[in-house]
Length: 458
Image 1 (cartoon, helix red, strand yellow):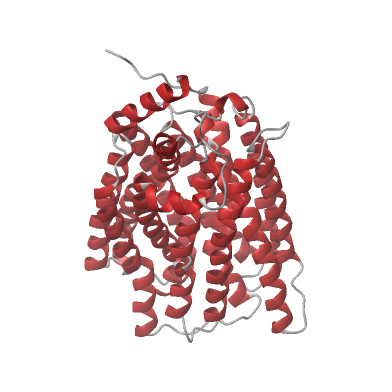
Image 2 (tube, one colour; image 1 turned 120 degrees about the vertical axis):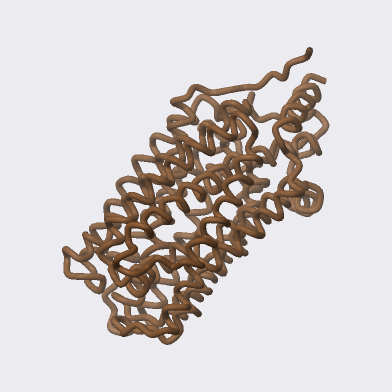
């Protein structure tokens, strides 16, 4: 019986490289959880306007993706194809973050808004550069189906720890330095994010160093150099990418709306903002367990099975929470348990997506003979971000009329509940439906890599 030959990596290399996602997740967590809060509480801006800015910046992020993807696939330097973009992206991210949170001292809201828009849109470019490599770099790191899911385990642990740090640690810092409307606390938080981003990026560069070489850029001898027009054939012909985009973008929309409304959920639904720093670390640890479960399921039964099982489990637990709404003071323990289960289920679905993207890049190589992981990953990101960009706008619209420190109302209660739980439920339902037409299961993947290797040999 013929066996499939894979190229692999050492476990420490996979672990180190996974920190590239943690580096960008530090920024993403801060912005998705707190940027709307920062703009309304410190900068005194209208939440609908801020939500619109977040949506427009997300759309800009999507537009820059195809350009950057093509540049990545055309790039070969003495430092490799991928590592330069990681470093440049990190520098842009950190400079932009400091500009937004350390230098806001204008005499008008208009000037503040212009300043924030400029640096937020600049931040988006750095985010695109660094996150594109998280997806594209996995293709050269390993294509072994028993190794590639290890990225999920490492990334799940590291990224969840960063989320716990931001979601659970930021609020106590802000309260210690005078509250949500005081700039000093925000500055200390952003300084920590910058330092941790620099550390994680450095480790990721080290992890990818020996694999970011020409011998791992697999392509057929007849394949043409990539060009802008190739994006049309990618979107039209790569069924695996089409269905993964449909599933992952709605999954991302669910997470964006939940994160953006989380502070308001604790303020107006649980009526205990201080509980966020207690509950979120517990929920985060459950997410780590979900990432490990995703890795285990993927190694044994394939990435597709792991994603589908996590998605349907998330649908079930969200429905239970929405129906019973255990938010009264005497049911807090039950709420924590249910949120923990929800985080575990989300952890399975959310974390496995990153290792499904390189599968779709391998699918493209099998389909057309082209090695274009940069274009595949940024095509994914382009549509994913365009759809999930609606998250910030949804939350902004739901909070229309909100003013800092306002008293709770029934309308505010149901609006927050809809964006925190209702939109995520709908997003997961669409994700589950899309996976019915996703072609790359465990058996197909092995066949696909075997045929790619045969084509390379020929």
